[in-house]
Amino acid sequence: MSVAESRRIVLFRHAKADWPQVTDHERPLADRGRKDAAEAGRRLADTEIPFDLALCSTATRTRETWKLAVHEFAHRPKTVYEERVYEASPGELIAVLNETPDDAQNIVLIGHNPGVQGLADVLAGSAEGDAGERMGRRGFPAAAFAVLSFTGPWKALEPGAATLLDYWAPSE
Image (cartoon, rainbow, N blue to C red; front, side, top):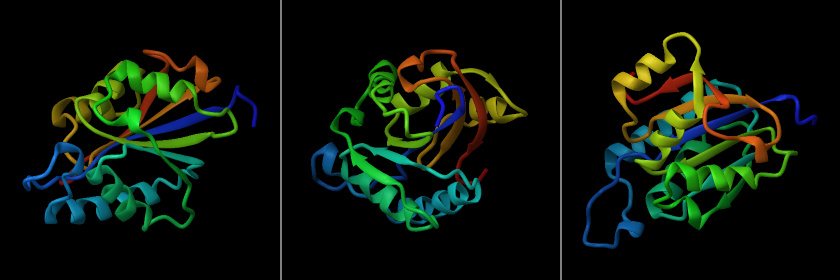
């Protein structure tokens, strides 16, 4: 693919986690989280974005969210479990995305707040329709996702370079 073609990035926050007596990294999904993760997967499948790559935090709740969501897809993208996505800042997430091979046109990043919401805010230089208003009003609750697009190589992804195309959150 040409690097001049439009790329899509979906920023997907893990679903609702439980609070058992385990480390933060090992927290599993709550019952509601499992339900919302599957619903988010159906909504992502409805976008018909042909994902080439999924970058997923190594935390238990993100891995469980992705496993339930991707089950709804007709085509499962290559998944890379990336330790640097856990507790990452928007700048650290941009650095991870800048390393994405240019043959990957569409990616989904499954991570945590406040990094995922911050990244959506930082990348979106503009928004289509009411997506920006809805995201601003709702924030980025568990299992929410934002769909952004930008043109250029992954190494050129920087603040303000993307357009927010869509936003979804449970109970949207």
